[in-house]
Length: 335
Image 1: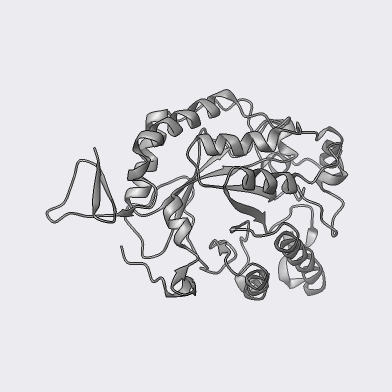
Image 2 (image 1 turned 90 degrees about the vertical axis):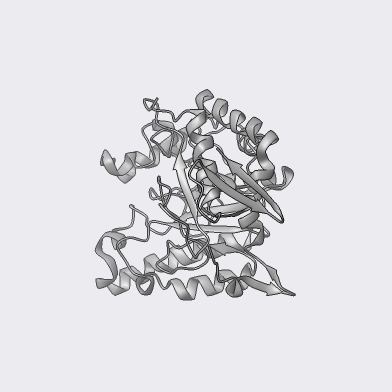
């Protein structure tokens, strides 16, 4: 695998992508109003819940004050090196103090800036900080009409761009901006080049994923592992069961063996593994998820040197029994 690293040089040969390539393993967290209903993060859309009814969930949104710290502690114990949390999903509910929408956690029963708590907890446990942000917002008619209604679309874009800039300005150094929901519109429609240039001006060392219509820093295959290595940095995001947001009836959990095997496969192919949890409404993490994460953490305590800071390696003549990684002059064979 050959990655063109020139685009990642920041100064003195230091690469802003270095930590990401070394980290290899991170936690994805989907949490919001949908967690109250316990039927996944798309519940508003799938069940056609009116905006006025969905908004009433704000009166019930009150996660425990130690919930966010519990997530970060769990990530640390699982051997994860970074976390990505949904700052706002497609339903439009923001977990941060935003000036362009009153539909946010500060105005909920909780009365708190969840993202501020998250950033503080990540720093406490030495975790790199990622912000997931959905470009789309189901509540805006302009999203459904698209750029053909230029005046309304521009108002919508002002809202989106302002929120992204708020996230970049108000929480100190942020390591990852993880866009989602750009479909079906183009980078030109979203004015992604303009937005991302401003993001990089505010956060010079940030990494941006490829979901704003531009390639940016890394690719994001979802729920699968690519069949071969890539010339670009990449990160597979995956659920532990079949749901991103908390889904009460979803008991289809991947086994601990399968999750560890997937981690090895991803790293052996040169990627990162972003493994998701969906906390309950009170912020607690279901036991089947914590059980599996602690198991991965125990495995990494013994075998982590074959994962962290490694790069994929191939052998002359091939190797068909598993995946090979290398760090400096040491080769690790996973059988």
